[in-house]
Length: 148
Image (cartoon, rainbow, N blue to C red; front, side, top):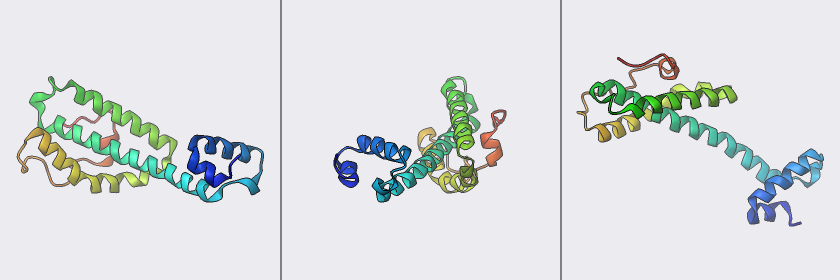
């Protein structure tokens, strides 16, 4: 079998299975510590990116819902998307509660980009959609909250 590092470069899936087997067998001296640490960090970053992406999609669809009420019936997918994002966010935050404190800064940091995308898609005037997110994190994640 190739060394941990070359196996990592040659066949990532096989490397993961080999590292898991070494962990279970408690063969600590054979583990590829450098790449294991890197992969563990990337798992956390992946969840953070997913959180950010789902929040942006949720906020965008809530903005459309709120600022284009006349299109709600034609845009039934908005309701579906809002429910889907909330459900997935709830599951993600339940599985990784330490991500919850990241929600407010991610909403604040991503709102400008989300607002710009919403304005581009809806062609609403910039003055219509506020410059800062009009809803609290609690409202965003609350299944019962639907902006009037």
